[in-house]
Amino acid sequence: MANPIQPFTPAVAIAPVTKVEISVACRKLKQKDLLSKSDPMCVLFMRHYDSAPWQEVGRTEMIRDTNDPDFVNKFLVDYYFEERQHLMFKVYDVDSKSVNLEDHDFLGEVTATLGELVAYQGRQVKLQLTGLSGDCGSILLNVEEVLDCKRVIDMQWRGKKLDSKDWFGKSDPYLKFYRANEDNTHTIVFRTEVVKRSLNPTWRPFTIQMRQLSGGDDDRTIRVACYDWDLDGNHDLIGEFHTNVRTLSQGPGPKNEYELINKNKKAKKKSYKNSGVVKLMSFRIGEQATFLDYIRGGLQMHFTVAVDFTASNGDPRDPASLHFMDPVRPNAYAMAIRAVGEVIQDYDSDKMFPALGFGARLPPDGRVSHEFFLNGSATDPYCAGIQGVLEAYQRTLQSVQLYGPTNFSPVINHVAKFANTYRDGRSYFVLLIITDGVISDMPQTMEAIVQASSLPMSIIIVGVGNADFSAMEVLDGDVAQLSSDGRRADRDIVQFVPFRKFLESGGSWQRNQAQLAKEVLAEVPKQVTDYMTKRNIKPGPIAIPQGQS
Image (cartoon, rainbow, N blue to C red):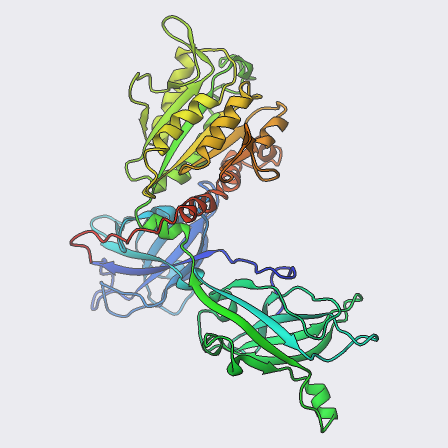
């Protein structure tokens, strides 16, 4: 039996990560061989932040004598929304059987992020290869979510007249489900809860992904073993049976009533029939819409940043200030903007981002504002790209006076106003608030979040500096559901993270930035699908641009 990769908890299915398949083709590659066309092969490399080394993911097959290859071998990649997964495709003309890439002729390369590829509003992305003089040709990339990441099975089982394994005439039975592997070994994929002291147990219904249970193959063998649980860990096998998804899909009935067979008992006892019967009570195959379904169906992610300009940050000219612009290392505000913005921007087609500030006195009269635009405009808050947001932030530090207090509700209500006008599933808003201190308007902030919880909107709060951020935990509904004036939040939309936890771990600022993005964005895909599911919004159809093939 294959060893499980992760520890198993009774009555749960461990959801595997989302997997995407990348198909590759090339057109008009350079011809390196004198007497024939090239023999191309594509190699995929990946890294998770800018300064990290490239790691090889895999290689396609080599195709002889063509400058327009359509590779059969695909790249299967784990997809994480919360990470900026950098990809580099390199194409080589294979000259020998050597596995060393330096022994082959380089034909061109291209870099992209996985987020850019999955967010593309069509099935094929065409990118220009570079790396050599002249035209290197192009690469065509198709990115598809693996189907059985979405197909799920709901089922329930019960047992009848199971063998007694305990002294007092009862057993504590549970079921273990195994997927058959190609080498005839088995991998455990699910374990039910234990039903105490029963020979006629009914186990709770459970849900498992199709890919987990059968690898997407309706005819793959599934082994089901029934055990008697023992406190000392030496669980006794009651019996087992085999089935497959195709048979199970016929539902409850004689074909899905299975005798439990214990081979050892059968070999010893001629009159042995079985060790009980296990019956299927219910079975359903469904499909869950995923975050990628909505993205590829046209969902646009809109990113807004709100920066704390209160005086507690310190004089921006002082190296000890949280707003100090170090020419070597970006400050925590800049790192947070990059960390979240560089991920989100891949899912926003126009890459124009509103940037707000709060807690400052503004020129020319020194009025205090908790909702002003960093680009200096009175009517248009948008900045061109994340670099535009950073430049606007730096300019603002030179033109405002840091003041106070720390009020969040105005910027939350600002974004909520826009989210309220786009409730049809075509847009989703992510507000990043970066702050150094405790909220001054907590009641109003709680009310604003509760109101926003019914909108297509998520709020990320990053705390910078060494202040006491314990009050922020109230806003993050992981422990207790947020409420205001007796009304509970419709769903959890807030994620709070203190940035110092990443800085204390050491490492380069690029690595700290990537780790911050990973933590604060991890909940966003679920928040998106939760919003869509609550409102029964289905993913839109994938649009294929005219003339694309």
